[in-house]
Image 1 (cartoon, one colour):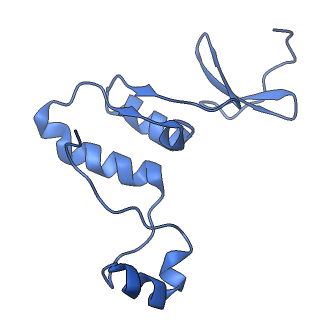
Image 2 (tube, rainbow, N blue to C red):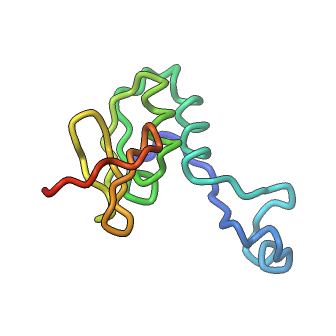
Length: 113
């Protein structure tokens, strides 16, 4: 059951006013990245003592969202896609056979898993 919600407007929609009008999107609605939108909603819900947000991979792959949750002291359960690995000390994004630490932004040394 949703506790709070806000319309997510895809990046290209504000450039198509006729499409927005047909869909009933308010004229002053702007695109916001999903992670930024989610953090704003969580800040609104903070007074409810929210304990652990849960979200799909559309949000889980957002490093700014995960860091924002950590900064807020929230435990969370976010789905990831196959491009990520959990490691001791953090999460890494796998790109071209290499691993990038999503916290430090540094490439990890080659390691066989």
